[in-house]
Figure 1 (tube, helix red, strand yellow):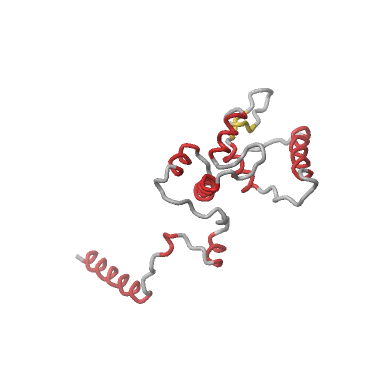
Figure 2 (cartoon, helix red, strand yellow):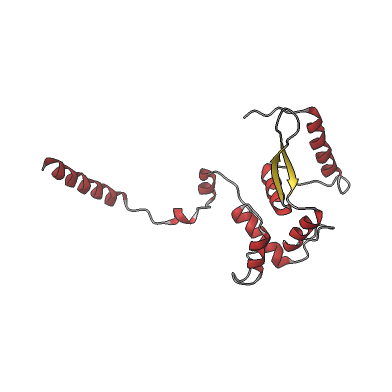
Length: 173
């Protein structure tokens, strides 16, 4: 699906980028990469809908709830919506765990996690790593399903030979 970009839409995004980079006297900022933007949108609570006006239907982002609902989501994640500082380390750790593991933030799941059913949250300083399969293996980050012991190649060769022999016997009869 092709999407036609318009200059007035570019200006809207450019205004946001300029405000972000000028915020706090031009202090160096985290890069605006897709990963951070997506996770931040899930934390705040957004949804994507198609616009209904005009000849072209354009995707638009909206807050899932009003500002008060967004503030409640942030408080559930242990963040003060006015200052954007962490006010509850435990809640922030569970929120970060949700975002790291599922790439999504759910207030209902947060309530369940905060009830203590799952014990203590993982450390807040754990990093989210996005990498391709070969990059993960090179860095020593191996998913649990890849940790299974691989059979000895000699055993694999023997088993394949046995299967071939049984198949040949079956085909001959």
